[in-house]
Image 1 (cartoon, rainbow, N blue to C red):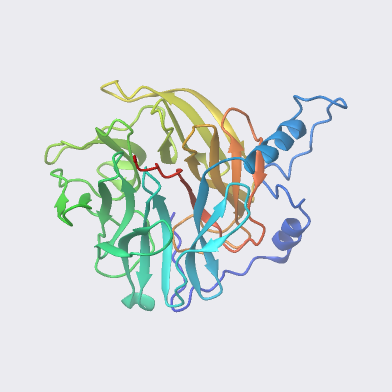
Image 2: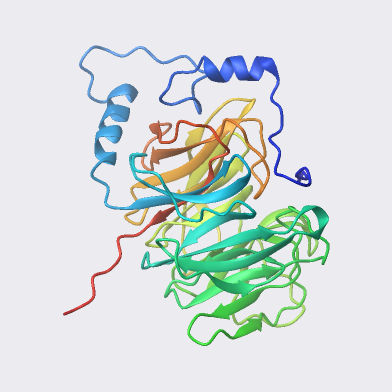
Length: 364
């Protein structure tokens, strides 16, 4: 269920003393997902032990050529930050005290970032979609009173959902319709299927033919992940993806795997054949999991398909623009179970991380 953010300044929700004590007592690397479970004993020198795999993963991070962007609440506002894959060199890309930038998604070539920004105060606030250069310059409006943007595979179009109401809400699924923005012309167009509503977590398939999205309380679904044909017709309910229960799907770069939230405490990976007329996931396996009261969310594939970014922390809200004190960005080995490293250390509602692909060099 969606939680409403407190109005006025974005005030942090107070955590209970017992949760704070539990969080502070956790080891510095990794403070959940599996911090509440006993560490299995392994033979000395066992290079295949979980601890050895985590050590290797940590050593690899300094050599990963991609940076990471994420949202973070910094005192009075949400900002977008960029950092190296090992968590070093964090840079504030937005630096705005009275605007809240969140939900960053990086273009396929790594040159631009689309995001949402909340402007105004209280119920007079408005959430809009923008894009900017990867260094934070050149902010451009995509659409007002809109949310949930994502890029087309060729980086020429941004898909987004128009808001359902004029009145401000942080509810991610408070949307009606589906729209597209052409970067070259600035033109906007609506998807012809006018029945679409209550969509969030849009994800364009790598073959460019469909959009996957989570729907909550709309089109006859209580909660499901649906496949939307880009050339869809009017008044047709999109089919759900078989066995893809949960939310927030994201595709591997080759389009053969999908990662998503199985539950609040588990992120799963599965195989998916985009050539099928009716999509169905197979070979489901968990890649990150934790125990209550912790959560894991916002999984995102690395450009080389080897790693998965995610957010994790105690209680708090996974929704855009809602506080999650004690949350961090982590990275997981996509081929293992709970081989993870925590990247951030400040716990200031760090969420919604996305990879910045190495920008392609222009031909001489």
